[in-house]
Length: 459
Image (cartoon, rainbow, N blue to C red; front, side, top):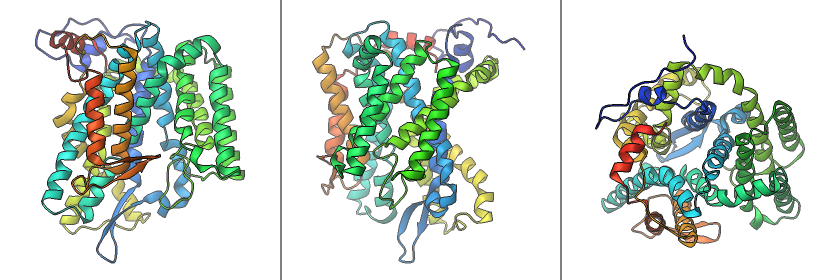
């Protein structure tokens, strides 16, 4: 089999290009491994949520959400493999470096990057906000429905934090060009300082700063990958140093074993991120880079590459709706009176493949309905200043993180929660998201340019 995909004619006018069409026109210099890592990281998070989530009816008849890894603590080291979000931020750095080399204006850069995240997110938020209001009007905002309308929004934290990284990317790129390796070193030192103040001196209020420092540091490493400066010696050092530091921090520090939050745990490595999670991200990136050569050769096979392109076009939609699929299946299970075997029981393990298969099918149905919002599009040309771009990004960031914190339910009753120090409600958060997207001009698209983007954009 040839390792190169032969050129193919463009699709007929009016026909959307297939994954095979896009694969056939892949530029020779495209880093296919980045596309694979993006899909892999989102797919792993989805699979991890499906495997860990437990919905059970207690003795009082109330449905509660739990975590299988809290029930089976001996399996928590699995989170060292399942917590792959650092890879997504790392490849984001690579992609942003590629775009920023063209020296776009700040507003142009953040508009283009935010559109691919915020348009499908806005559709998801709009649908679930409407459903939650209808549930509340019907007087059914209780029990399992209350749980669902709160929890289904939780993965939006990732969208919000990534938007923050996008907003800082142009500044971080300039710092990278001026100061190189000193930038991630300084960010890493900041992570250390935050954790020392938090755990040694009890300054808990500073902990959220690591949401910025940890993810920006991981993202910054993507710039070095884009520059071709992550050589084999460097990635070996990242792998060995990262895993050694992570194990030492877990063994001798206050950090828990799990790289995801556990119910009832006093400390989470993830929310907000800790030095242990940063060390975990370093070795994970190092390992990914060590595997790049053999995996890239595999990606040269046409069928493999076509599958990656197809998955890239679905990944964000699947990520947004995967918990909806989980709760739909659980609702059917509860309605039929079916009970899950005890977590960790032999039958529970035997049923995992079937459980995942059902969730894949339901998620595929939701993707088929909502994937249109995730299609590549060109925004209508606009000339926006930096101030407007920054304002739009801040509003979107608060809106998305607000929804992640408070959920969609209880909107009419005025339910609120606190995002760091800011009170948020479902309706206020949704309004901020819509207003920010409007400031960025995300609702205006150029039809002719969108058709061109459909025919040329990979994944």
